[in-house]
Length: 137
Image (cartoon, rainbow, N blue to C red; front, side, top):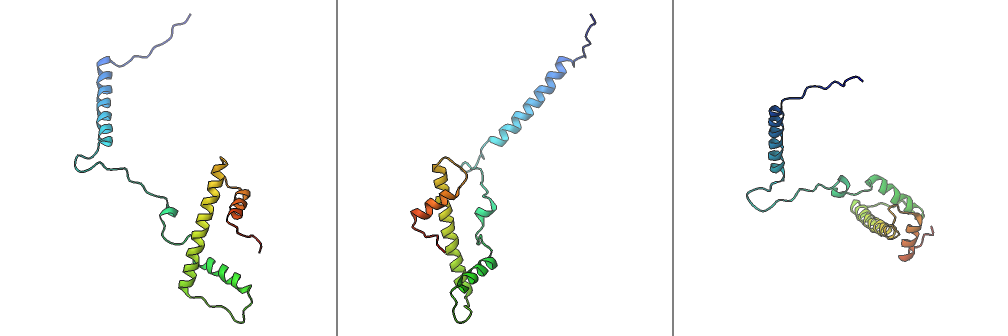
């Protein structure tokens, strides 16, 4: 039977001194990261919200919303074209976005109640029915 070759190991003293040095360095750096600042109150880790959550503007583009409003109001067939003030369109857009946000929050709650993560058309139908919103166009 052939003998197996073994590679030579480092001397024990050298290995242990390197390991101890590394261990000491890691514990020092590890302690420094976790320790609270010595002056003042304990600081919390800062939280940075995602882009859409932290945005203060509208979620629907202004030009697209304006086109949609004009398209809907053309169906009323008034004598002339309707002109809108900028502030009126902004107020209307703000109201629409708040309504849609609350609506989809409720739809999400219905899906969570059914132990699902994905919203389905039946969740939308249930919220429309609960709020007495007609879908007839």
